[in-house]
Length: 292
Image (cartoon, rainbow, N blue to C red; front, top):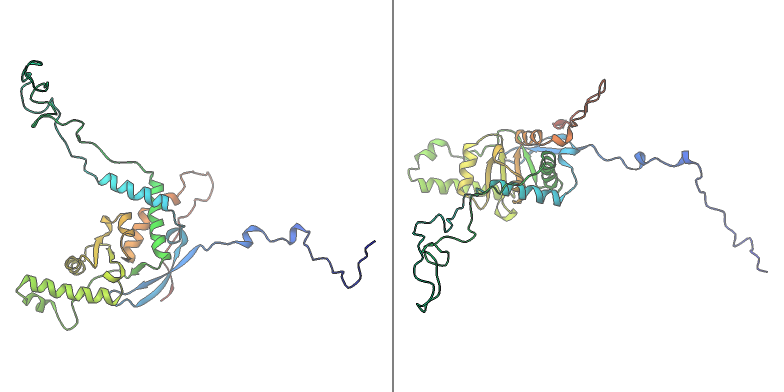
């Protein structure tokens, strides 16, 4: 018979047997409800203040399937679908048989409008149609905020103060620019200044271009970026879609434009169920100033 000595005996581990001692799931994992967002100056790229934004606006998990559906949905609904061809019954020409069926030594043929002959109709040609597809509004709005969240987590979403405008180069003025009589010379002057600003802030061609989104048309910024299309593009907030948020290396957006985009695309955060004598759910709030 084998026996154990006192040297080989160890104390039993302290195992928790009480349910009250185990931590609850809520204590183990508490997701953050807000994320910090820095507001920069333009074009100096200097931080001005730190704000708190809702995680449901800028910190959603990546959904590649949802983004793909949204991009395809936008592309399908922008197709014109105006291509049209004529069938053998629509082209001009007589319906008489050109020559008899047999005895000529040639291949049998019908009338002049046959698709096999030059000038005849088109077989299975395109006709005007609607290429548009459907996508629920809540799924589309969720895809919008998913794209913004993807940019935010990668550090590619740059939010600037309102009034994002590209000033004239240092030491110059509008009078000097107006004195440049040659339009080509003036555009070259603006293009050089725009390239210097974008390269200095790492927003230019080496960083994969940038998309600038403003709450309204900024004449100086839009005109300068039109001279350097390989460095970036400027868009009004009404002209932006999800593809514009994903196709460039940086997204530089005004704070007001970002608020406008989020307010337009948060239908999935509002419930349509009404509870009598109950508190209505509040929309997530963003933009609280933490440090200024």
